[in-house]
Amino acid sequence: MEFQLPKFQLRGYPYHVIRPVTGKYNTVSTAGEAFKAFVPSPLPPEPPIVLGGTLEQLHAEALVALGRLDGITSLLPDPKQFLYTYVRKEAVASSQIEGTQSSLADLLAHEMESAPGVPLDDVREVSDCVAAYDYAEHRLTDGFPLSLRLIAEAHAKLLASGRGRTQCPGEFRRSQNWTGGSRPGNARFVPPPPDEVMTCMGLLEKFLHDDPVRTLPLIKAALAHVQFESIHPFLDGNGRVGRLLLTLILRTEGLLKYPILHLSLFFKEHRARYYELLQDVRVTGNWEAWLDFFLQGVRDMATRTASDIHRSLDLFERDRQRIGALGRRARSSLLIHDQLKRQPLASITALAAATNLTPTTIASSLGTLRSLKIVREVTGGSYGRLYAYDGYLAILAE
Image (cartoon, one colour):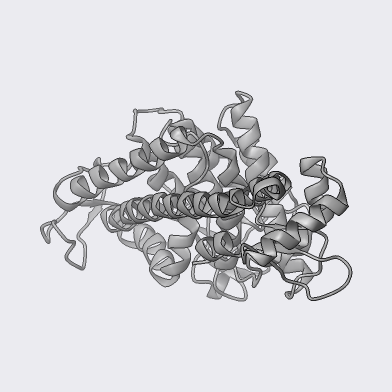
């Protein structure tokens, strides 16, 4: 086993830290051009990562923050009230990392069959990302194991439409891909050649199932994400599936009962650092810097999400009391308010399907909510109107 010395100081770590070589380079030739493709070593790293100093503290803080977030969702009378929007918020952020321009409001409008203000392919890609999250979540809930089959099935949902639909949805690649260049010879990173992909993915699946050793859940998620990104097993959609994998691991390891943590937002806010650290693991074996970043993200996003839920609950209660003060007119308006908590951008048709109220009653109730400045009509048209729960969307959009 060969080892390298790091070129920089880590917080809480001595300068001379022995690091593993995290993979090998295979020389490959395509179309007459030779290049080197990176094949990652199996997980876990050798020698093992030791959680000491800063990492140990961050790990503890991240677990506490996750526990608080999970505790909040466990106490909610209707946790699914938040899932609709939070899954979509994660999908939007994950897709924006890959360059789409669609916002949460665009996605919600698209789901109401209203034309968003971005290219249709962008919002379709985000919608398919939601479908992949929902599909994987339902499969896990039904008892299906976290496996290569589930990952491939989620990928098929992810590329069901939009720009990636021709890139072999649901199939592990059988040709070479790369990132950051016009061809493998000038690429920033070239993942394993196609004949190594299934071997690498099979070893990753074993690691997810604690073979050869049991790994702490948060550390497992962090290591597995880098490994998946290094294998790059699909022709397209690897980043989005890799971030979905994080959510699936947190769920299967029992750290979260509901997929309500949106780490993609943290990665988007620190996009350059995110990509830099993924590459740094491959080049220097610097797992510690990646873990430092990842654990900060878990801690900070769990804390922010818990705060957002508390603020949303406070908003819901204030608005409920204002509506309740209307007396006899309050009943149908409260039903509409309850539905808007689940679906903060909705049409009269969607609200009618969800509440069984008549369109006339819904229109009247929406008028009441508009007069209280709880709801705003956002299209400005006579047909296909959409109504936004402005206060809630403002919290989600921060």
